[in-house]
Length: 219
Image (cartoon, rainbow, N blue to C red; front, side, top):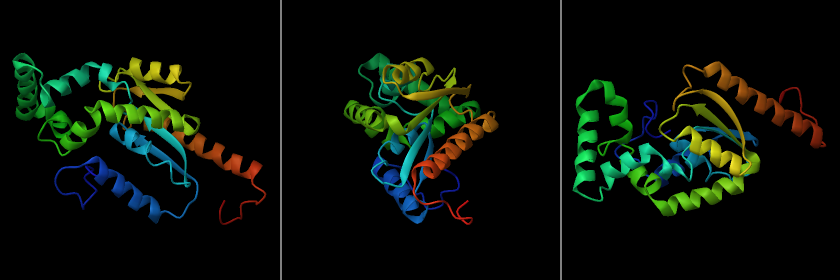
């Protein structure tokens, strides 16, 4: 996807529309009619807007951007960097931005969240836009019957407690897995098992409710 080192066509700043366009292009190339979309972080927000395609039957979202991200500490830092409301906030925002730019330890933060990041436009038009978050809330509620949230402990980017509260309040299925915002590398086997279990459950459902049996080739 855009921003990934394997996405060779990416040039310049990434926008919400560009990301949607890129994902839709990929989906149209896939012949399978029963897709399970696995998405992480900002990709989780994008995935919520892809369910109009009948092929997309399940969403598995790992620590996704959610409608109440604005209640988190990380959100307040982003606001200070992108939209400082006063001189103090502007000073703090510039200090954080300069810190992530100067030290290698913060290279990943700079690449993803600073004003020089390729995601800067995406952050401004989605994460920091309250109207977008309201729309995202409606999409979550519309898609919750086909959604599984994977929530990690000690995620200070999207805030574990806020996402868990959102899931409980709206009766969205969830599982706790891993630690931190990006647990895929360290907890890959647990995450893969969850994805595989949901994939198998989907196949069983097709076999139970479809009048057509799967051919040997499809199996």
